[in-house]
Length: 274
Image (cartoon, rainbow, N blue to C red; front, side, top):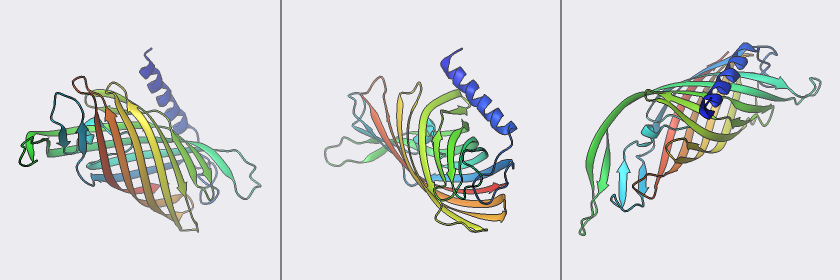
């Protein structure tokens, strides 16, 4: 069996086990032990501004600018320029005695994401080499309509005050052209300053790095997220979050020495957990 197929089988089996096993409580307060937690999250992301791509090879102009080029590469951390739907579930293992007031938990969270993108009018802009002035001219127009599917299973460490520490295992993306695998590691840290029976504000920061296999794309991610959860019941809450993310990509092409890309995006998310 090919290596990528083995990773896919392991990922799918991990998700099946997660779904079939009853969940423990998500944190020390608010969730009953043994409850099966499912979170449905919708998001819409958009670029802060167009991507800039620097090229250092001898065969193309010294600089080329793309509109929303990152959508064609496929982000490993989020969706830009379109809606997104996520389905999450959490399995939590308690690793400290229940008698302790500040309990800590180690769990496995499954993430299943579907996204649909549609963009018209994006293009490739070539920088003029005219000695009198440097201007941009549009040399190509493209549009695309494609779907992505994401499977990921983060390891989550939960505590009352320092809410969770998340390490993302290899994630897979499916699109209409087949399977594109990204070996991407993500580390997130979230802090909940206070929690009462109804209101739970939180802030999260994260870093990540990875590689898109087959495309020689090397990725670095930086993100910050601000959110607020409102608990209608002990184990039912509505969450609203705003995410800011920067993504840097360096990748190789046969005809050039290398390209680099920087992407900034904002994503607004609304979720329901029960």
